[in-house]
Image 1 (cartoon, rainbow, N blue to C red):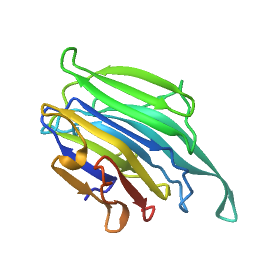
Image 2: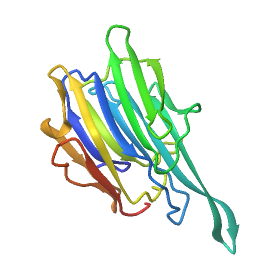
Image 3: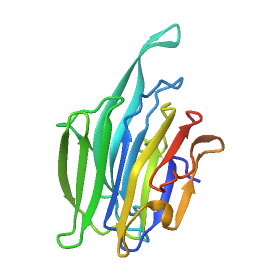
Image 4: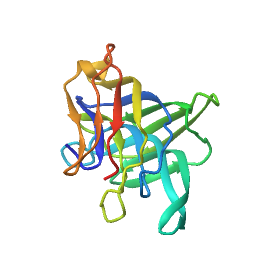
Length: 219
């Protein structure tokens, strides 16, 4: 269980690529400002699991007007992003927009040849992709497919935006053993739990390359 992740972590020997697709969900205001993102990643961001290299979509819902102490108007924000944690924080992709309902495709690759992470993010509705890279150290031992509630600068998680049930599709991991669907690799199911269940992943699809994640509560 994690306070801020829901999804699956997959054991991988010297992982070099994670890929996945999903439809950008519509974020609903959950009674407070809510934040969420979906991503694929390599590594875990600690000494044992190396650099965490990740990319995905952000979907936030923020109150912009109060009336009688209650929110009367809110604004949603959607965008693509990349991150190399803990080296660099989330970086917004500004030259490829996304909106709710857009099918997106994301690939994260690490190259030992030049010690760089390569990110490919595609909006299939627009039939456009962005490819970018960052210098990083190596990810180690794991790949992830996650719905996350981001954290403040002090590390405390924010409230989770209500995205209903969202589904990861066409997932794969490449490591020293080749490219496989994650269900066929050793994996751990992650519940987002802080004393209350905030979000939970469902079962793998029959093909083993996808699963749903369902919002339960904001915090």
